[in-house]
Image (cartoon, rainbow, N blue to C red; front, side):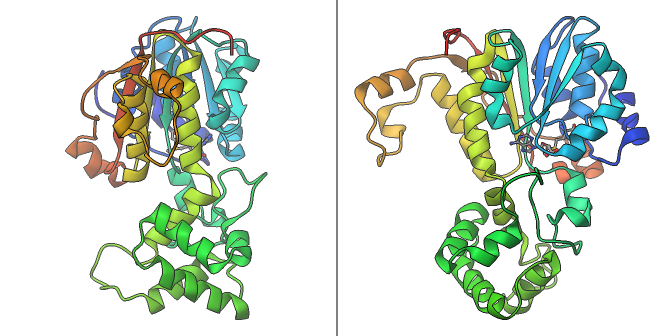
Amino acid sequence: MSNSQTPAQNSASSAAIYQHVSVLFQESVAILSPKDGSILVDCTLGGGGHTSLMLSLAGPTGRVIAFDRDLVAIENARIRFQSEISAGRLTLVHSAFGRIESEIDGLGLRGKIDGILADIGVSSHHLDAADRGFSFMNDGPLDMRMDQSQGQSAAEFLASADEKEIADVIFKFGEEPKSRFIAKLICERREATPFTTTKSLADLIASKVFWKEASRKHPATRAFQALRIFVNNELGELESLLNNGPKILRLNGILAVISFHSLEDRISKQAMQALTGKTKRQELPREIPFTQAEVALLSESHAEIIKPFPTIPSDEEIRTNPRSRSAKLRAIRVTKEYSVNK
Ligand SMILES: C[S@@+](CC[C@H](N)C(=O)[O-])C[C@H]1O[C@@H](n2cnc3c(N)ncnc32)[C@H](O)[C@@H]1O
């Protein structure tokens, strides 16, 4: 396959209010080894780039199931892929991919899936659309929910959580060394003026946290990342996918994940390693009292890692799409089927 952006991606422009340039576009779909008749799952439809390539490689007898928890992505795809949907080749699922097992069961496809891809995190649409409240660069309501039909927004969390809870979130999901200081600032300021906009939060952090203007990183970067991960339970979702995704794959089926920061990549790497059965008791968290049976289960091999090192974008991809720079693609192949019964 050539490495340029394809007609599949370009055709998005007609429908796309949901703009996103797919990362590791060909590599991530190719790793699933799609062929005529394949049944594939795209956990993260977004702008539909990967879905579109899956549809063309799976051919007229293939099928793609595409998840997104964002209704705007789903509605956009309904227009863009009208004919594939009518032909029964594409099924859109408005749901979080953490529910993959029950959704795929609902479609009667357990054990029939050839490949699953998750290109996790937010899309360019989220970052660019001020009204979604993900970016400190664009002023908008401090929302950050990918699924705006449920859950609490970032503003609601900051209005109701106590200082320690806010500090813990900023530290755990943003790895922000000044988390306690930032949480204190937030709690002091919210007494007078609640945070309802992205700018009010970004400006407060920028005005009180020392930073060099010349530095490339805005001082609110880590806090925004943390709130986004927390509000959307992004790491919990990834863990559910890594636990349950392999169970719905057929023998030799492949699960591939593109992650964008070290917290996510660590989870993918460890969970995939665990599926190979090479996890030893001493590598499991000490604080969890695993029984012998659980350790034995964890040491059972269900999969093999496809490549020892993650696939990363080429220099050319990073130059044309700087948002791809931290992407890492990891994948496993199921070598022992899970029982068909749940
Ligand atoms: C990086 S974009 C995917 C872009 C897509 N691969 C493409 O080629 O256009 C991530 C998408 O996944 C969705 N998403 C993120 N976490 C999700 C989850 N847990 N469940 C379902 N969708 C999720 C987001 O709403 C967003 O649309």
